[in-house]
Length: 365
Picture (cartoon, rainbow, N blue to C red):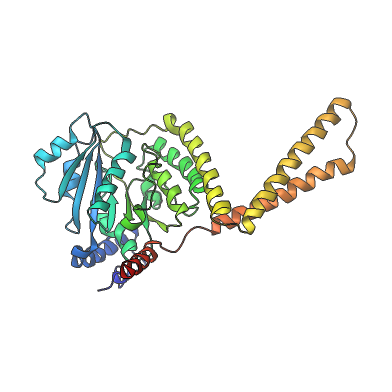
């Protein structure tokens, strides 16, 4: 059975709601992935920090399609790793420990390294706080198995009926962060960038600069930025989050300034990498010329406005028209660049091409 067959044959009725469609897709995907579980090579990484109330239930809910589960005790003061080793009898579970807290990003990267070293094919990251439905794992990995994506992430904003369940502050914070992330990562068609329910092909994960990735709460967004520089295909998967008695360690007011600075940094890096170092297109020229004209028009016009105001002498028509034309033309060129950038979102999965390259290299050796 080919991987592309996953999800085929599902024909929900026109009246079927979001939940019904998702349930049908989940059932089909579960059956077909389970039939090929041995070759699927799916592993799960669970960062563990203050999740002792939920992590054992999360592990118990992970299905047979997963061949290994890595639980990373990130120097948890509550002893998450000890609890798992004491209470969980699942032979797939392995506890990895950090001597010092490295943040959620550091914990995930430790799991990635171990999974890649053990020969995993697809790595799924699930939080240990019970907010993520482990039954969705087959649905997350299906687009990767089909060769449609390299990285799949959850999107809690797809079904508007369920957004009301999200705490208001978290809802507003995610909206703002999503807009900034679109520009800094280059994935203009994605939303909910801080969603931690993700799946990635191990071949693509192995190309990531682990030492450069953010270790704390900016990790998921920084991952998207790095994936864009690799031209990896990323898709959103609609999902619902479960909000219970868990405590979020992410405070929007505390990270807003930090996130804004990092978004600006990544935006500058992405433009430099994609439009001037790895490629030079008409969009690169539009950005350079457009930015130059906007700066010139602003400075020239501002200076002559100041002179006119301070001396009481009206500026000539030519003096007014020069910055006006520069600003209009500059803004048009910048908007043209923006349109090109939005249309330039990676669509073709990278990992099938990597597999071909690896096979040819192995045959040559």
